Length: 185
Image 1 (cartoon, one colour):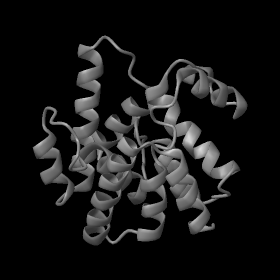
Image 2 (tube, helix red, strand yellow):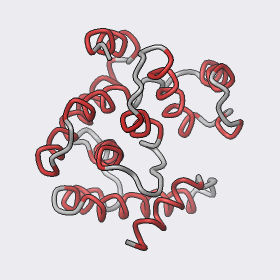
Image 3 (spheres, one colour):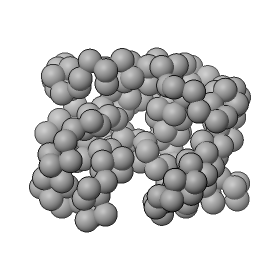
Image 4 (spheres, one colour):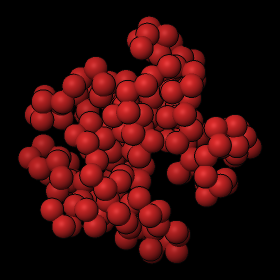
């Protein structure tokens, strides 16, 4: 894993707006690493790569979904596709083979059952980084993140599910599975 190459690729790929969010996620993830003792190098790579393909055109995303043989459910679905595409690019172009890093990026939007510590840190850091526009329970989730990572993930997932239900949007199976997992713990 060549960090200089990765950082250069990220710098050339992200828009200025996305760089601000990404830096916020990186900072929050480092704060959580200090609390929970996670591997900072892995967390940093996942944090800077998580939104590599966020904000790209639908045409580009759909092309990459096909190129990387991702599930058809990601066609015309940028919210779910961008993490899967980023993980595929990380593996194929950036030559990152660490499954923990790849899963953290792949599932940073939906979560999944039995997430690793690094996956939870990236998932929740993306949701609570300090540049986020306010949304219901954000302050409570931020408070929980520094005391109980699992509870913070559970509340964030519940928020997502409620928002999607209210918006009459489909809820991804991974999100539902993740929420059930945390409820059962």
